[in-house]
Length: 75
Image 1 (cartoon, rainbow, N blue to C red):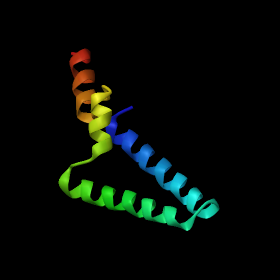
Image 2 (image 1 turned 180 degrees about the vertical axis):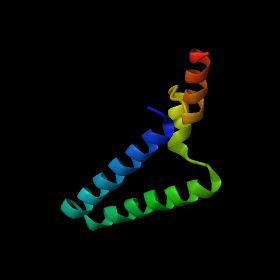
Image 3 (image 1 turned 120 degrees about the vertical axis):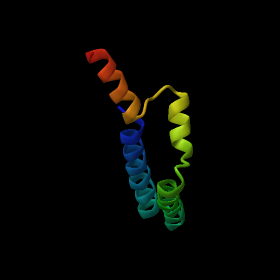
Image 4 (image 1 turned 60 degrees about the vertical axis):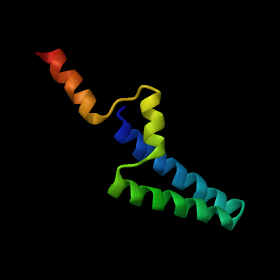
């Protein structure tokens, strides 16, 4: 799985988790959900995303890196 796809999954899980926590635990969890949305928005403009940097450190690859790998293996 690429970093880009993992980020969609991670963002979706975090939004669902914080929404459930806001519903069943405390409405203050909506602030964290708002932070997640803000981080997604600023990342689309700046390209800066801390979870992406962490995933790169763990050895995950981007879509472009995976495409280059598959094209070099097929040649």
